[in-house]
Length: 83
Length: 540
Figure 1: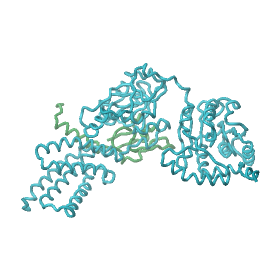
Figure 2 (figure 1 turned 120 degrees about the vertical axis):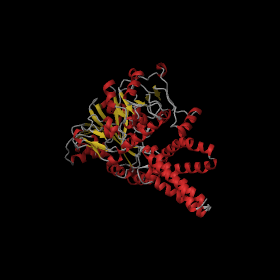
Figure 3 (figure 1 turned 90 degrees about the vertical axis):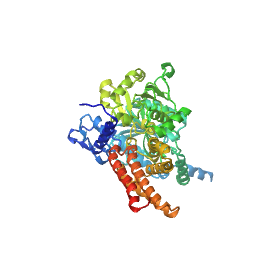
Figure 4 (figure 1 turned 60 degrees about the vertical axis):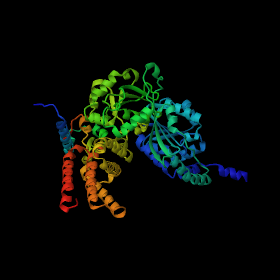
């Protein structure tokens, strides 16, 4: 079934990816967070902040997210999802 | 008469206290509070050099520290003791009469968790400063810290002028009232570094002229590393004909492969040794040269260039071209493991979307840290050992916006203007001028145009462009209706195209390809209007 990509199909793939990128939202499960704050370290737009008292991360500004995926990849607990 | 004058010249401890408070506009105390709150814990053994009338010593003892406070002036010490006796403190203070240069001979080695010096180094000669710092290294216990509060010249030229303008009258007034003055320590941080302390500026007041600096002792200097013997190339910031040509290419045509690349491998920046930090970068020529531009002459470091297929790290990591494997391969294939004693990589923060740091740690046992987003922040990141939010967050300042507009325009010039030049020459100049004008205007105005989407931003852009057109027509040069109509269609279409397409240049907006459908629709609609309206109105 896998056809080799043509010029037009790869263009269409770009559109699909772009659409997905735009619709992606961050989902965060604070229960799974162990507070290493790697998400806060890598987020280039400041979505995350640190709750020093409870020792967990806080998704403070989800609207700033650019769906780069850095926090999702770096979180060792897989507490963050983009979908 | 002379005796009276000489008597007046003498400074009493009380005068000194008042004078310092006046001279620092009360800000010295703020730094003392910061120092005590953040760095003094109950039970700590603290040495204060040059305690004066003992205000800081009492504050630290109040937090529960056991303070040994030395000063060269018996009068000051007597006053300090008097004020201490009047109080009940959690910790203890013992005052000792001692010249700062003698602490190494009189006090026990490795016996202090903190050594504190407030407005002391400015009173010492350069030789004395080095001698005292050397002694501080001996007196500090393992993990001990040196904390210096002192006056320094402000960093910038303008700040310096402003500082002296404000400072001169205060200095004069203070001296007349109290015969007290202070001097600024030149290059305090350099001094610390020379004495093998890592300096970190923790706080500053009075426009950066009064600072709190922490010094953490570094291991004794490692033997210098012989780069030439190891045959490791050194990267320098040099402007050459080649670099200018590559810059010009990169300015307008960077999106077109082949991307200018640097050969992956280990490079030296400055004169790194076996303890120098190791930075990882991708191998896009422009990135590496900009990195070196910011580091050369300021930082001694190793630069491990990993293969990112000549793409910048963010895009390469996002596209799967720059991964943990690229970094692991770069470490393994270079000789870095036999060169540096530590196992600590500083990764570009923007590759975190594709480089799994956990895998690097797990597979090759190197620790990783995320460096600043922008290379220009690296020297202060290294100096402070800490990363601030400003170093972590993207900015898209005007210079970058103009650069990215140019980089995008290069491609559109080829795709749009060259065909026009060949097949439809009368349209070349109007389209070229409109395209460039609209694009740069859009680049400048980007933060102020409403919406987070190129298509939405195209509405205000088109409105502004049309307002400009109608202002031109009414005020300068009236156009015949048909030409005005064509210009309206053209500018609207180009505005939509520019705003929607240039969305991709901004790091804050995503997925411009999703606009294509709308662009096509708007294009068809404008085309229909272009054909049908003149027929309906009978302009032809």
